[in-house]
Amino acid sequence: MAATAQMHRLIALEVRVEQTRRRLAKLRQKGIIDRITLPQTGRTRVWYPTRDGVQLAGEWPEMRGRRPPRGAVNRTAVRLKVEHGLTVTQTALAFLEDARHRGDLCRPLDLTGHVHGPRACWAGLSALTSSLWHISSTDSRGAR
Image: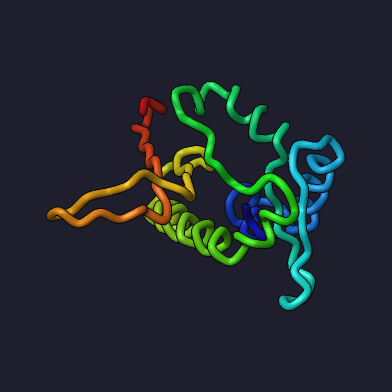
């Protein structure tokens, strides 16, 4: 899940934000993503994948071997998880923007998150992780 401005920073810095909005609207028309509008934040739009979108993304070669996240795929679930989801996305953007600032090649699928990660153990303590990130790096030839 991501706000329009976050999606723009993630995938389309080279174009104006209006272009990103149009791209998102086209994906929504195709039923791949949907959105909610947050009334308390100046009508910020938050985008999330539909069930069809999750299924489609799961077929990408980059996603082979990864279990799709158990994210919110309907408006009610998104509204319940929006604050946490946008915070997780903001954290991912911090990693991506730092990599870009250093000149590293960092594409959108190089950092994919699972909001509900596995149970982790440290020194006998157990905790349910808030998110688990898959971070990939590539060399100058594009090899992972």
